[in-house]
Length: 248
Image 1 (cartoon, helix red, strand yellow):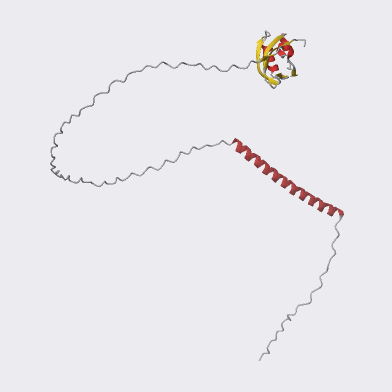
Image 2: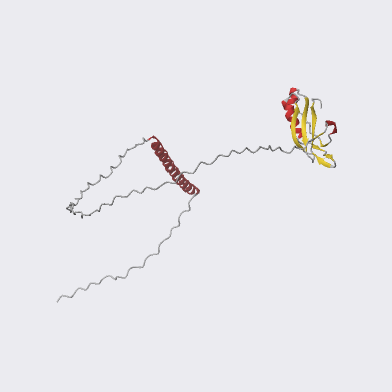
C-alpha cells in the first residue's frame, strides 16, 4: 500500500501588524496663510455681492409690478342684474255653486178695521174783550244836571319865588351846538305837595324843537322846595324859563 499523503495547513494566526509611521507635516508658510485668508475674503465678498444682487432684483421686480399695475388698463365688466323670479301661475280655486232658496209666500192675515165714529162739533162761547185801558200821560221828570265839584284852584307862584332843592341839568344838545341853536324855553310846571314835578308842559317854544324837548327832559329831574298855605303843603304852578345859550 501507498503511504497517505499528509498536508500541513497554514496557521490561521495573522502576523503581527507593524506600527504606523507618523510623518511630521510641514508647517504652513506666511504665503499659504495669506492665500487662504484672501480666498475667504473673496468668498465672503462674493456672498455679500450675491445678496445685494438678489435684493436689487427683488426691488426691481416690485417697481416693475407697481409700474405694470399703474399702466395696466382697468377692465370694467358690467354684470346684468339677475332677473327677478317670475311668479308662478295661480291655480284658480273653483267657487262653490250657491243655490238660492226657493221663496216661500206667506199669506197676510185679514184684519178687520172698525170705522171710527164721526166727531161731534162743540161750539164754545168766547168771553167779550175787555175795554181798552185809558192812557194817562204823565209829565217827564225834570233832568237835574250833575255838576262835578270845582277843582281846587292851584296856587300860582311867580318864577322869582321858586326855590330848588335840585336844579335842572340845563344840558345843551350836541347837535344844537353844531347847528348853533340857542334860545329860551318857557315851561309850565305843576308841583305837588312834596315838591316833585307832577305835570310839565311847553308854555312858549324857543323856536327849536330839539331845545324844547331837551328842556322838558331836564325839568323832570328837578326838585322844588314845597309851598305851604295855612301851614299845609299845597300844589302850586309856575311858568319858569330855561335858557340854552352856546356860551354857557
